[in-house]
Structures are given as structure tokens and as C-alpha cells.
Amino acid sequence: MSTLILALTAGAVVGLVLGGLGGGGSVLAVPAMIYLLGFSPVAATTASLIIVVVTSLTGLLAHARDGNVRWGPGLLFAAAGIPPALLGGATAGEIPAPVLTAAFSVIAALAAWRMLRPGPPPRQSAGPVKAAGAGAGLGALTGLLGVGGGFLAVPALLSVLGLRMKAAVGTSLLVITVNSLAALLTRAHTADGLDWTVLAPFAGTAVLGAWDGKRLAAKLPAQRLQRLFAHVLLAVAAFMLLDTLI
Image (cartoon, rainbow, N blue to C red):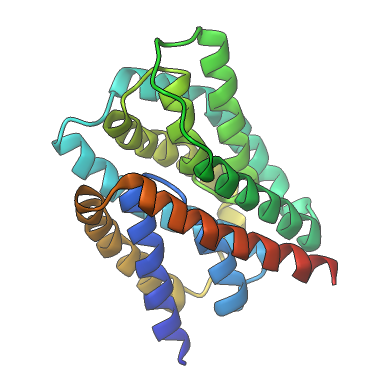
């Protein structure tokens, strides 16, 4: 199968996941870049951030139009993640590739485990310290591993800020966009060697997939979508970890 077809297919899948679940797409983008398209771990995480920014911004506009974005709480949550995202982006290039891949596989497994657990019911907003801590942790992951962090942002916005599911999904895209842009600022030097003939088609189909994912989420039970994605993610995490250790 040609590299272009692989890029188009992988981009469509990433977009469907991001649009349908409000996150998780970048956790598939990085292994797709490494194992299907031949990117190094550092280049893959940088490319993932570019894709996340484009697709998240597209999804954000759609959710904002539907009134599902809580701008005030979302911007405050995102602001706490900007310094860690900058720091993580600056240090990612210094981490050995096997360590970066192993860390990514652990985060992917954590994301799958979190999706398989029954979600906590929405509650009243927690204190500002807890909200800032959650935002900072999310920003660090975004900068270091190139993941948007929607798989962690949605549950955090549900439990920490007390948002309803639709608002949490829409607001998570705001947080992801801000954190990913911050991380990219410190990774500009790693973007020089990216293959844009692969990255551009990947990003383009991801954007189209995000719109389809949003429509799909309106027709299928969210729990079924989450469980299916979680099992796929567990398999990807196990493969990446074994590949690093063997």
C-alpha cells in the first residue's frame, strides 16, 4: 500500500475518533506516524501536534456553533497548562527515542483504562487549585508526548469543573488547541525535516473525519464508541511497549 493511501486512511481514522469522542485521536496519530509512515518518535510527536491543532480547531468551531463550549472555564483550564506545555515541548527532543516511545505507550494504556472505567457523574465544580493542577498535568503531556490529551481532558472537565458531557467534549477541544499551539512554539526547530507530502494529506483527511465523527457520535451510543476505541488503544499500547523492549 502506498504511503499516500496510508496517510489518508490513518488521517480519516484519527479525525473520526477526535470528532466522535472529543479526544484520543492523537494517541493513534503518533503510532501511525512511527509504524506506518516511517517518522522518528520526535518527528511523530511534532507532526501529531500539528494535526491535533488543525483538527481540534475545526472541531472547536463546530461545537462552538452548537453552544457546547464554555469559554471562561476552558480558557482558565488551558492557561494552567501553557507553561508545562512549553517546558515539555522544549525538552522532548532531548529524550531518547525508546524512552519517549515507552512513555507514550504507558499514556495510551492509561487512556484506554480510563475509557473502560465507568465515568463519574458530573458534580459541582472543584476548587481552583485542583483545576489548575489538572490543567498543568494535561499541558505537560501535550508538550512532552505530542498528545492533545482529550482522553484526559474530558473526564477532568466533567469531574473537576462539573461540566455536562456535551460541554466537556466541546470545551476539551478549546483546551487541546491552546496547549498544542503552546507546545508547537518550542518545537518549531523539529518541524524542518517533516515530510509535508505525507503530513498534509493526513491532516486534511483528519479534518474531514472530525466532521464525520461528530455526526457519528450523534447517532451511536457514546459508551459503545468509547469501549471499541479503548480496546484498539490497548492493543496499540501493548505493541509499542513490546517493540521498545524487544
